[in-house]
Image 1: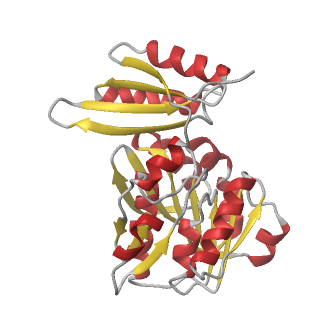
Image 2 (image 1 turned 45 degrees about the vertical axis):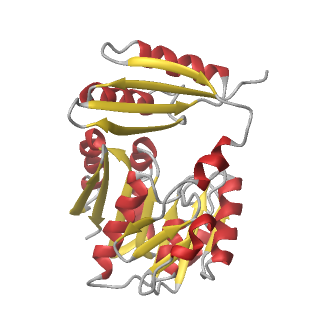
Amino acid sequence: MTHDPLQITARGPRAIAEAAAEAIDANPATEQATYSILEEDEDRDLWRIDAFPTTPEETEALQGLLRGLAGLKVHVEVLADADWLAMALSGLPPVRAGRFFIYGAHDRGLAPSGKVNLRIEAGAAFGTGHHGTTVGCLLAFDQLLKSRRFGKVLDVGCGTGVLALAAARTGSRTVVGVDIDPVSVRIARENAILNRAPARFVHASGLDHAAVRAAGPYDLVFANILAPPLVALAQDIKHGLRPGGVAILSGLLRVQERRVLAAYRSRGFGLAGRLRRDAWSALVLRRP
């Protein structure tokens, strides 16, 4: 069955929008859906969710969930038959996050001297650097680099590879990225070549892959995914880190912090920092 590309937009107060985002993550029919949540008008307490379903079942589930929350105004639009993703990416401005400058091909002339410049071409992979979760991870990493270096780094759910490449370009001698999406792995490898960054990317689910195990234990693990898999991977991430190692976790909403923290604190992790951007949170945890 064909599926016309759709954009579902829901607007409402922050509390309701965040509740909707949490419900999307918790619902098995929508937990893998592509969506964003952001503040549209601070003075009016107006927040916006944009969802891009890829199947009729996902469309039905998203619409039912969003329309079922009082206080949200929902609009559905059929997208034009065009490469709208590439068109959107071409207009994205560069991102500055501490020492890191993330840019696309259209901004290659803007890369400043004295920064770690990373050219990231996203295509169908997540991680242009613009999302609050990615920026949060980069800012947290930038702060950590002021006091220490990380010899071995693992990026779980690497997407475009931006976090792994940030580590490779700042002196990490062993960098491995892993993703369940083969397209993301291909794009991450292409970005590594573009940036002359010595990072290896493998197609696998979680940390149970020969290449991932062979390079460990790690000094730092990035996991910018979603709250449910962050919780599910808590024990694996602990085993993948050396004692004293650090995990930077994101892809979670502020309202999901308690759930994720509980999973890691029960395994001995301590909270070393927290960075919030928009509705999103990045947690810095240290294995004792």
